[in-house]
Image (cartoon, rainbow, N blue to C red):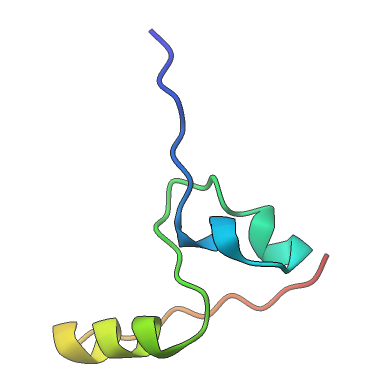
Length: 53
């Protein structure tokens, strides 16, 4: 049985680099207040991926 992959938050970004990761199983957040606030609220560190396409 094949399951359809769901996009993560990167699906609405304009960057080709971010869009190529929009269907990764990781729930990535684009850089911004939502990611910063979630990390702060949950007391978690940020994992930052820097790349180009």
